[in-house]
Image (cartoon, rainbow, N blue to C red; front, side, top):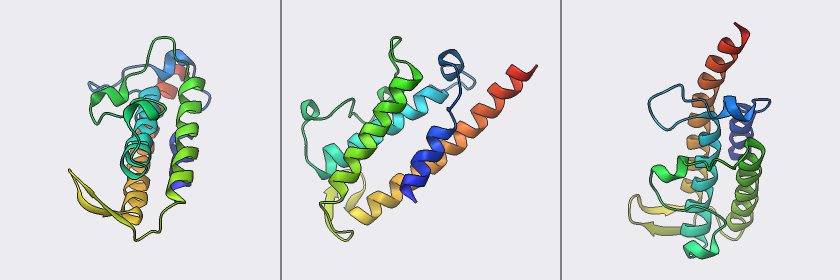
Amino acid sequence: MLDGNREALIETVRGLSDADARRRLVTSLTTPISLIKHAAAAERIWFQRFWAGLSETECDGYTNRDEGTFAVADDESLADVIAEFERASRRSREIASRFDLDDTKDNPREGRVSMRWTLLAMSEEFARHAGHGDILREQIDAATAR
């Protein structure tokens, strides 16, 4: 389910130009490309930082739980950000494979969580963001068709 929701999120941006992927259609920082960037950060926060216990410097990108997860540098292309998310997802799968579903750890925000909880939470998050991406894509495609 989680891999399916990862792919559904990526599908919302496939075929967009870099300019369209960066279009601000809502008042928040949410753009098609920033949804993918945020998802990559979520992968790192939960799997690299929380489950693997890696320091920020050992992670392969941004790992703070704030609006910076949506920040996309001017020189990053949509292909770059998709590749970043795919890399983070591969690393998450590898880290998750080291744990049993019922293994638990204490999280300062969520309390005691299991690997099962984490996988479900990530699946839910990516499904929600794929829905956001669908809506943004619908707005972009409708504007492009005119």
